[in-house]
Image 1 (cartoon, rainbow, N blue to C red):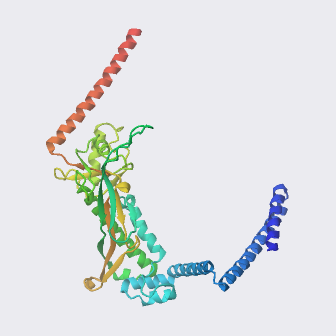
Image 2 (cartoon, rainbow, N blue to C red; image 1 turned 90 degrees about the vertical axis):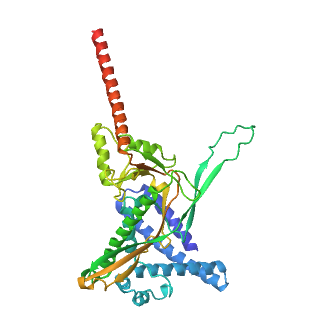
Image 3 (tube, rainbow, N blue to C red; image 1 turned 90 degrees about the horizontal axis):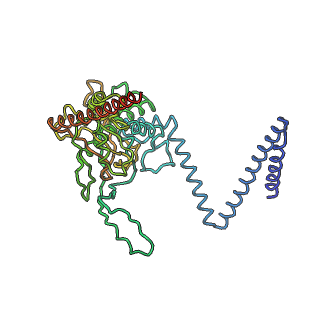
Length: 418
């Protein structure tokens, strides 16, 4: 179109003009002109685009038909999003959660959803659920996926190192690689909560936020506990179906975490420490006994999970702390999506107490997918702990004595020079 060319030429001219203008009002006038030209340009392009589509449809152009269908689908998607985030839909969705009756919520979706398809979740519900997972100290660090069914993850048990090959020399030997496969099978993690009739009377967003927040928090906590339990049961030697973890049998001393880190694979680059809160106090006691400048945690973040036993009450050989890289070594798979939590309501069992029991259920697969991504700290026998403590104390005393001797020698040398 000639007019489109004219508009483009005029916009280029205005750009040159503005660069040399000092009068503010003139600049504003030109900017307003550019806005008007842009609006006219967009209008002409829309007319041009519609003409092309009409001609293409008239000539049965398959590419034009495809673009029209794509645009219609986008409009349907945008419309569905607008509907599912409306106050009317959120209220209907809350009633659907309470009663299981979907007629009202489907009526609002009309032709924008399949007749027997899943009920669309309001966007804020996804945010509530995601926040619960993100706030959990353990699960926030775990890698996540949304893959249907069981998934298989390959891991390396052992392999030969890379070698340097000089030009003209014999070909390098083929890598000796031994691998295993971890299968992650999803299960339903379930949790009951009891709510009052007053909570049941809440409408729309307030009701949904309450039950999703409460139940997702408890489900997330259970998932974290389950993952910790799986880590504590890892074998010392990897098999074709399971990764392994080294065990370090030491009490909470100044060197314990350093030894645990040394037992991780090179790929476990972001380790954290997981322990019971009471065990934290035992480590800090060891730190204070050796001077406040000592960092018993080696600069690593400590994550608390009281499903691990406290060191003071743990039995011999029990795992009381874990050092490892959760993002590298573990995976949580949500086959139905991370925001999907199913509910069942029981209004009869505790009706005399004016309480309604709600069962929340989320479909999750948890797996440990990398070898030596974790080190397990286990409790030694009392005699072993005392022996280790004595050796650490002797080493510390020797270091202090050496430092004093060096200082005394320096002082003597200074006196002799005088």
